[in-house]
Amino acid sequence: MTDDLVVWAEEVARTCLRDLPRRLQHVEGVARRAATVADAVDDPELLVAAAWLHDIGYSAELVTTGFHPVDGAEFLHAEGAPHRLCALVANHSCACVEARRRGYRGGPRTPARRMRQGGAAWRRWVAPELASLGWSVDPSGRTD
Image 1 (cartoon, rainbow, N blue to C red):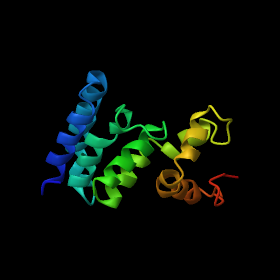
Image 2 (cartoon, rainbow, N blue to C red; image 1 turned 30 degrees about the vertical axis):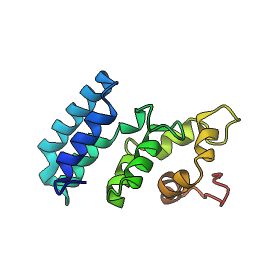
Image 3 (cartoon, rainbow, N blue to C red; image 1 turned 60 degrees about the vertical axis):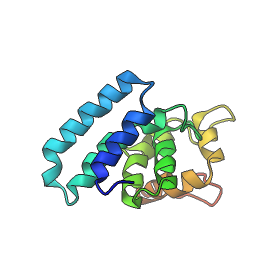
């Protein structure tokens, strides 16, 4: 990773999304918007970096669980990205709510089943967010 987190994030996003031009265009717009409000947060560089990286999990090369926020966060974690950046990517757009809406308790072919098979990724990024919303998460990854 370079010293400049935003430059690194842009490079990673452009590489990961090179085969998804519409997704990359969306990410570019989100990053531009984030840059305009970045001074309002405690870590402006982190916000803009997260904007660049929030959808990298759509890259076919990164898919492990089939849930793009978690897949992106797992990739970033493996690359040594800061934990807070990984958590922002994993939980963007209320990913924990989306996971629940997708039927986390679903059958073997649902995205939720694939997320459970992601095991550690699910426990690292999404389960803590569910717990913070007051939903219990048992060791098997099931929610109440």
